[in-house]
Length: 326
Image (cartoon, rainbow, N blue to C red; front, side):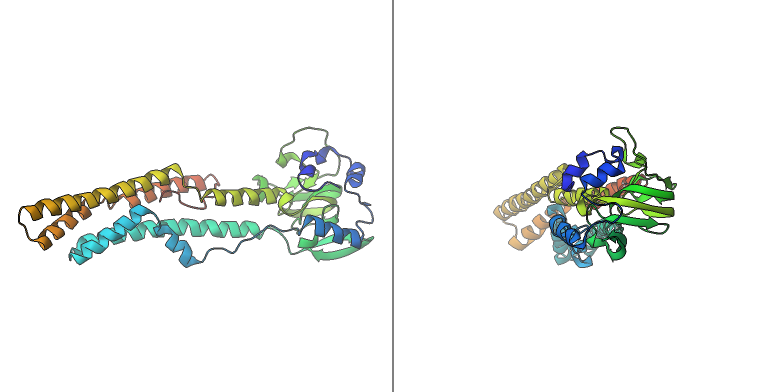
Protein backbone atom coordinates (compact mmCIF):
# COMPACT_ATOMS: atom_id res chain seq x y z
CA UNK A 1 0.00 0.00 0.00
CA UNK A 2 1.17 3.58 -0.61
CA UNK A 3 0.55 5.53 2.59
CA UNK A 4 1.18 9.22 3.20
CA UNK A 5 4.01 10.97 1.45
CA UNK A 6 5.30 7.74 -0.14
CA UNK A 7 2.56 7.80 -2.76
CA UNK A 8 3.54 11.34 -3.77
CA UNK A 9 6.97 10.01 -4.70
CA UNK A 10 5.38 7.57 -7.20
CA UNK A 11 4.36 8.96 -10.60
CA UNK A 12 0.95 7.31 -10.52
CA UNK A 13 -0.02 8.47 -14.02
CA UNK A 14 2.78 6.28 -15.42
CA UNK A 15 1.69 3.15 -13.55
CA UNK A 16 -0.58 0.59 -15.22
CA UNK A 17 -3.91 -0.07 -13.51
CA UNK A 18 -2.84 -3.66 -12.75
CA UNK A 19 0.39 -2.51 -11.11
CA UNK A 20 -1.46 0.17 -9.18
CA UNK A 21 -3.98 -2.35 -7.86
CA UNK A 22 -1.07 -4.45 -6.60
CA UNK A 23 0.53 -1.44 -4.98
CA UNK A 24 -2.63 -0.47 -3.07
CA UNK A 25 -3.38 -4.14 -2.37
CA UNK A 26 -6.92 -4.27 -3.73
CA UNK A 27 -8.99 -6.28 -6.21
CA UNK A 28 -10.09 -3.63 -8.70
CA UNK A 29 -13.33 -5.57 -9.36
CA UNK A 30 -14.40 -6.42 -5.81
CA UNK A 31 -12.89 -3.46 -3.98
CA UNK A 32 -11.72 -3.56 -0.39
CA UNK A 33 -13.09 -5.90 2.23
CA UNK A 34 -15.04 -4.12 4.96
CA UNK A 35 -12.57 -5.17 7.66
CA UNK A 36 -9.58 -3.98 5.61
CA UNK A 37 -11.32 -0.65 4.94
CA UNK A 38 -11.84 -0.15 8.69
CA UNK A 39 -8.20 -0.98 9.36
CA UNK A 40 -7.02 1.53 6.76
CA UNK A 41 -9.38 4.18 8.10
CA UNK A 42 -7.90 3.75 11.59
CA UNK A 43 -4.38 3.85 10.13
CA UNK A 44 -4.77 6.71 7.64
CA UNK A 45 -7.31 8.82 9.46
CA UNK A 46 -10.52 10.35 8.18
CA UNK A 47 -10.70 11.65 4.62
CA UNK A 48 -11.29 15.26 5.55
CA UNK A 49 -9.45 18.52 5.90
CA UNK A 50 -8.89 19.83 9.42
CA UNK A 51 -11.09 22.78 10.22
CA UNK A 52 -10.48 25.08 13.15
CA UNK A 53 -13.38 27.21 14.34
CA UNK A 54 -13.35 30.59 12.59
CA UNK A 55 -12.68 33.66 14.75
CA UNK A 56 -15.72 35.55 15.95
CA UNK A 57 -16.53 38.84 14.25
CA UNK A 58 -15.78 40.70 17.48
CA UNK A 59 -12.33 39.12 17.93
CA UNK A 60 -11.58 39.70 14.23
CA UNK A 61 -12.46 43.38 14.62
CA UNK A 62 -10.57 43.86 17.90
CA UNK A 63 -7.46 42.26 16.38
CA UNK A 64 -7.13 45.35 14.18
CA UNK A 65 -6.24 47.47 17.22
CA UNK A 66 -3.26 45.62 18.69
CA UNK A 67 -0.28 47.58 17.36
CA UNK A 68 1.58 50.11 19.50
CA UNK A 69 1.06 53.01 17.11
CA UNK A 70 -2.71 52.47 17.15
CA UNK A 71 -2.69 52.55 20.95
CA UNK A 72 -0.59 55.73 20.84
CA UNK A 73 -3.23 57.29 18.60
CA UNK A 74 -6.04 56.15 20.88
CA UNK A 75 -4.18 57.67 23.83
CA UNK A 76 -3.74 60.90 21.87
CA UNK A 77 -7.47 60.97 21.11
CA UNK A 78 -8.34 60.46 24.79
CA UNK A 79 -5.99 63.24 25.87
CA UNK A 80 -7.38 65.55 23.19
CA UNK A 81 -10.85 64.85 24.55
CA UNK A 82 -9.73 65.63 28.12
CA UNK A 83 -8.30 68.90 26.83
CA UNK A 84 -11.68 69.55 25.14
CA UNK A 85 -10.03 69.60 21.72
CA UNK A 86 -12.98 67.72 20.25
CA UNK A 87 -12.03 68.26 16.60
CA UNK A 88 -8.62 66.60 16.97
CA UNK A 89 -10.08 63.81 19.11
CA UNK A 90 -12.78 63.09 16.52
CA UNK A 91 -10.28 63.19 13.65
CA UNK A 92 -7.88 60.77 15.35
CA UNK A 93 -10.63 58.31 16.33
CA UNK A 94 -12.09 58.43 12.81
CA UNK A 95 -8.72 57.52 11.33
CA UNK A 96 -8.22 54.69 13.83
CA UNK A 97 -11.70 53.30 13.14
CA UNK A 98 -11.19 53.57 9.36
CA UNK A 99 -7.95 51.64 9.72
CA UNK A 100 -9.72 48.93 11.75
CA UNK A 101 -12.72 48.65 9.42
CA UNK A 102 -10.59 48.28 6.30
CA UNK A 103 -8.51 45.53 7.90
CA UNK A 104 -11.62 43.81 9.27
CA UNK A 105 -13.39 43.77 5.89
CA UNK A 106 -10.35 42.29 4.13
CA UNK A 107 -9.83 39.53 6.71
CA UNK A 108 -13.55 38.73 6.86
CA UNK A 109 -13.64 38.20 3.10
CA UNK A 110 -10.54 36.02 3.29
CA UNK A 111 -12.08 33.86 6.04
CA UNK A 112 -15.19 33.35 3.90
CA UNK A 113 -13.00 32.28 0.97
CA UNK A 114 -11.18 29.78 3.17
CA UNK A 115 -14.48 28.41 4.46
CA UNK A 116 -15.60 27.90 0.86
CA UNK A 117 -12.38 25.99 0.15
CA UNK A 118 -13.02 23.67 3.10
CA UNK A 119 -16.54 22.94 1.83
CA UNK A 120 -15.19 21.64 -1.46
CA UNK A 121 -15.09 18.14 0.05
CA UNK A 122 -18.25 16.05 -0.42
CA UNK A 123 -20.66 14.45 2.04
CA UNK A 124 -20.96 10.95 0.49
CA UNK A 125 -19.17 8.73 -2.00
CA UNK A 126 -20.07 5.61 -4.00
CA UNK A 127 -17.52 2.83 -3.56
CA UNK A 128 -17.25 -0.89 -4.29
CA UNK A 129 -16.55 -2.98 -1.19
CA UNK A 130 -16.86 -6.73 -0.85
CA UNK A 131 -18.01 -6.77 -4.49
CA UNK A 132 -21.09 -4.59 -3.89
CA UNK A 133 -21.81 -0.93 -4.53
CA UNK A 134 -22.09 1.05 -1.30
CA UNK A 135 -22.76 4.69 -0.47
CA UNK A 136 -20.58 5.77 2.43
CA UNK A 137 -19.66 9.09 4.10
CA UNK A 138 -16.85 10.68 2.14
CA UNK A 139 -14.79 10.96 5.33
CA UNK A 140 -14.62 7.13 5.41
CA UNK A 141 -13.03 6.77 1.95
CA UNK A 142 -9.54 5.25 2.24
CA UNK A 143 -6.57 4.66 -0.01
CA UNK A 144 -7.31 1.65 -2.23
CA UNK A 145 -11.07 2.19 -2.36
CA UNK A 146 -12.71 1.71 -5.77
CA UNK A 147 -14.85 4.80 -6.38
CA UNK A 148 -17.56 5.20 -9.02
CA UNK A 149 -18.02 8.63 -10.55
CA UNK A 150 -20.51 10.16 -12.94
CA UNK A 151 -21.70 13.57 -14.11
CA UNK A 152 -22.54 15.86 -11.21
CA UNK A 153 -20.36 14.08 -8.65
CA UNK A 154 -17.76 15.98 -6.67
CA UNK A 155 -14.60 13.89 -6.46
CA UNK A 156 -14.20 12.61 -2.86
CA UNK A 157 -10.42 11.93 -2.98
CA UNK A 158 -7.46 11.81 -5.34
CA UNK A 159 -7.73 8.74 -7.57
CA UNK A 160 -6.14 7.05 -10.58
CA UNK A 161 -8.77 6.22 -13.19
CA UNK A 162 -9.04 2.59 -14.30
CA UNK A 163 -12.09 2.95 -16.55
CA UNK A 164 -13.77 5.91 -18.28
CA UNK A 165 -16.64 6.55 -20.68
CA UNK A 166 -16.68 10.06 -22.17
CA UNK A 167 -15.56 11.32 -18.77
CA UNK A 168 -14.79 15.01 -18.20
CA UNK A 169 -14.07 16.96 -15.01
CA UNK A 170 -14.03 20.64 -14.10
CA UNK A 171 -10.73 21.40 -12.36
CA UNK A 172 -10.83 25.19 -12.33
CA UNK A 173 -10.89 25.27 -8.54
CA UNK A 174 -7.59 23.37 -8.39
CA UNK A 175 -5.62 24.12 -11.55
CA UNK A 176 -7.32 27.24 -12.92
CA UNK A 177 -8.28 25.46 -16.16
CA UNK A 178 -11.58 27.06 -17.14
CA UNK A 179 -12.80 24.39 -19.58
CA UNK A 180 -13.71 20.76 -18.71
CA UNK A 181 -10.81 18.33 -18.92
CA UNK A 182 -11.17 15.05 -20.80
CA UNK A 183 -10.07 12.04 -18.76
CA UNK A 184 -8.89 8.58 -19.76
CA UNK A 185 -7.60 5.44 -18.07
CA UNK A 186 -4.44 4.75 -20.10
CA UNK A 187 -1.05 5.15 -18.45
CA UNK A 188 0.97 8.17 -19.57
CA UNK A 189 4.70 7.49 -19.80
CA UNK A 190 5.97 10.98 -19.13
CA UNK A 191 7.98 12.09 -16.10
CA UNK A 192 7.37 15.19 -14.02
CA UNK A 193 3.94 15.86 -15.49
CA UNK A 194 2.20 19.04 -14.29
CA UNK A 195 -0.97 18.56 -12.27
CA UNK A 196 -3.22 20.01 -14.97
CA UNK A 197 -1.97 17.48 -17.54
CA UNK A 198 -2.52 14.29 -15.53
CA UNK A 199 -5.49 13.24 -17.61
CA UNK A 200 -5.78 9.77 -16.07
CA UNK A 201 -6.20 11.11 -12.53
CA UNK A 202 -8.93 12.98 -10.66
CA UNK A 203 -8.55 15.13 -7.59
CA UNK A 204 -10.46 15.81 -4.41
CA UNK A 205 -12.79 18.79 -4.63
CA UNK A 206 -13.07 18.86 -8.44
CA UNK A 207 -16.34 18.03 -10.23
CA UNK A 208 -17.34 15.43 -12.82
CA UNK A 209 -19.30 17.18 -15.57
CA UNK A 210 -20.01 14.33 -18.01
CA UNK A 211 -19.63 10.60 -18.55
CA UNK A 212 -18.78 7.87 -16.08
CA UNK A 213 -15.61 6.46 -14.60
CA UNK A 214 -14.12 4.16 -12.01
CA UNK A 215 -10.99 4.98 -10.06
CA UNK A 216 -8.63 3.65 -7.42
CA UNK A 217 -8.16 6.09 -4.54
CA UNK A 218 -4.49 7.00 -4.16
CA UNK A 219 -4.65 9.75 -1.53
CA UNK A 220 -7.11 10.99 1.08
CA UNK A 221 -7.36 13.94 3.45
CA UNK A 222 -4.25 16.06 3.81
CA UNK A 223 -2.34 13.82 1.37
CA UNK A 224 -4.53 14.98 -1.53
CA UNK A 225 -3.64 17.92 -3.76
CA UNK A 226 -6.43 19.94 -2.10
CA UNK A 227 -5.06 18.85 1.26
CA UNK A 228 -1.67 20.24 0.38
CA UNK A 229 -3.31 23.59 -0.38
CA UNK A 230 -4.96 23.46 3.05
CA UNK A 231 -1.58 22.66 4.62
CA UNK A 232 0.00 25.65 2.93
CA UNK A 233 -2.82 27.85 4.21
CA UNK A 234 -2.25 26.50 7.72
CA UNK A 235 1.48 27.20 7.48
CA UNK A 236 0.70 30.69 6.25
CA UNK A 237 -1.59 31.19 9.25
CA UNK A 238 1.22 30.09 11.57
CA UNK A 239 3.65 32.39 9.78
CA UNK A 240 1.30 35.28 10.49
CA UNK A 241 2.23 34.96 14.16
CA UNK A 242 5.72 36.14 13.19
CA UNK A 243 5.70 39.83 12.43
CA UNK A 244 6.58 40.95 8.93
CA UNK A 245 9.43 43.45 8.42
CA UNK A 246 6.85 46.20 7.86
CA UNK A 247 5.08 45.34 11.12
CA UNK A 248 8.41 45.29 12.96
CA UNK A 249 9.39 48.71 11.61
CA UNK A 250 6.01 50.21 12.48
CA UNK A 251 6.19 48.69 15.96
CA UNK A 252 9.66 50.15 16.47
CA UNK A 253 8.44 53.50 15.19
CA UNK A 254 5.49 53.36 17.58
CA UNK A 255 7.74 52.78 20.60
CA UNK A 256 10.14 55.50 19.43
CA UNK A 257 7.24 57.89 19.03
CA UNK A 258 5.90 57.00 22.47
CA UNK A 259 9.20 57.64 24.22
CA UNK A 260 9.80 60.88 22.28
CA UNK A 261 6.35 62.13 23.26
CA UNK A 262 7.02 61.31 26.91
CA UNK A 263 10.40 63.03 26.61
CA UNK A 264 8.81 66.17 25.17
CA UNK A 265 6.20 66.21 27.95
CA UNK A 266 8.85 65.82 30.63
CA UNK A 267 11.33 68.42 29.26
CA UNK A 268 8.72 71.08 28.53
CA UNK A 269 7.00 70.57 31.87
CA UNK A 270 10.26 70.74 33.87
CA UNK A 271 11.60 73.82 32.03
CA UNK A 272 8.31 75.69 32.36
CA UNK A 273 7.94 74.80 36.01
CA UNK A 274 11.50 76.00 36.74
CA UNK A 275 10.62 79.30 35.10
CA UNK A 276 7.77 79.69 37.54
CA UNK A 277 4.84 78.78 35.29
CA UNK A 278 1.80 77.13 36.97
CA UNK A 279 2.15 73.34 37.06
CA UNK A 280 -1.28 72.69 35.52
CA UNK A 281 -0.63 75.12 32.68
CA UNK A 282 2.69 73.47 31.86
CA UNK A 283 1.13 70.02 32.04
CA UNK A 284 -1.58 70.94 29.53
CA UNK A 285 0.97 72.64 27.26
CA UNK A 286 3.29 69.61 27.35
CA UNK A 287 0.51 67.17 26.61
CA UNK A 288 -0.72 69.31 23.72
CA UNK A 289 2.76 69.26 22.18
CA UNK A 290 2.95 65.49 22.59
CA UNK A 291 -0.41 65.01 20.87
CA UNK A 292 0.63 67.32 18.05
CA UNK A 293 3.74 65.19 17.49
CA UNK A 294 1.68 62.07 16.78
CA UNK A 295 1.28 61.40 13.00
CA UNK A 296 -2.44 60.63 13.00
CA UNK A 297 -2.52 59.83 9.30
CA UNK A 298 0.17 57.13 9.35
CA UNK A 299 -2.05 54.06 10.05
CA UNK A 300 -4.61 55.20 7.48
CA UNK A 301 -1.92 55.77 4.84
CA UNK A 302 -0.40 52.33 5.51
CA UNK A 303 -3.78 50.57 5.49
CA UNK A 304 -5.02 52.28 2.33
CA UNK A 305 -1.74 51.51 0.56
CA UNK A 306 -2.00 47.85 1.58
CA UNK A 307 -5.66 47.77 0.51
CA UNK A 308 -4.73 49.01 -2.96
CA UNK A 309 -2.05 46.34 -3.20
CA UNK A 310 -4.45 43.64 -2.03
CA UNK A 311 -7.02 44.73 -4.63
CA UNK A 312 -4.47 44.31 -7.40
CA UNK A 313 -3.43 40.88 -6.09
CA UNK A 314 -7.06 39.72 -5.87
CA UNK A 315 -7.45 40.54 -9.55
CA UNK A 316 -4.70 37.98 -10.12
CA UNK A 317 -6.59 35.38 -8.04
CA UNK A 318 -4.39 35.70 -4.93
CA UNK A 319 -6.04 35.13 -1.55
CA UNK A 320 -4.84 37.62 1.10
CA UNK A 321 -5.96 36.42 4.49
CA UNK A 322 -4.57 39.13 6.74
CA UNK A 323 -3.32 42.70 6.46
CA UNK A 324 0.28 42.76 7.72
CA UNK A 325 0.86 46.44 8.10
CA UNK A 326 -0.14 47.10 11.69
